[in-house]
Figure 1 (cartoon, helix red, strand yellow):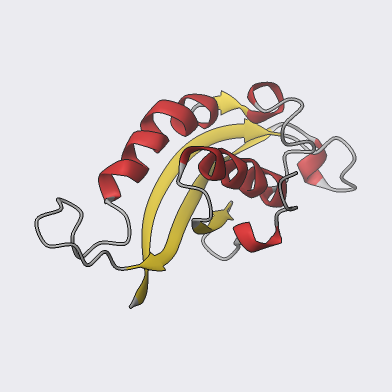
Figure 2 (cartoon, rainbow, N blue to C red):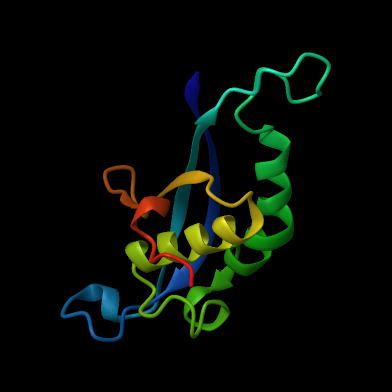
Length: 134
C-alpha cells in the first residue's frame, strides 16, 4: 500500500528580487515555511527497523540539518543560493530544495516541496516534473 508522509520546517532568511516591479525588489526577509512530502510504498518487512514506514522522519531531519538548514536559515539567499536559485523566488527556492532532496534520497522517491513566504501563500514543486536524468 502507498502512503504519503510530510514534515514541516521553518527558517528565517533575507532575499530580494532585483527585477521585480514592486517592493520585493528591495532587500527584505521572511520566516519561510517548508513542507516536504514523500509518497511511496509502506515497507512490509517484519524485523526491519523501518517496517510500516514510507521513510523514517529522522532521515528527513538529517538532510535538513546537514544540507538544507546551513544554506537557508539566517542567510541572504541571494548569496547562499547564488547560481542555484536565481532569482530567489519561492518557486526557485522550492526547486533548489527539491533538487537537494532528490540527490540525497533513494532514486525514484516521489517528493513534493512547498515553500511559503506568508501564511497565505505556497509555491509547490514535484519530483515528477524534473527532467529525466541522462
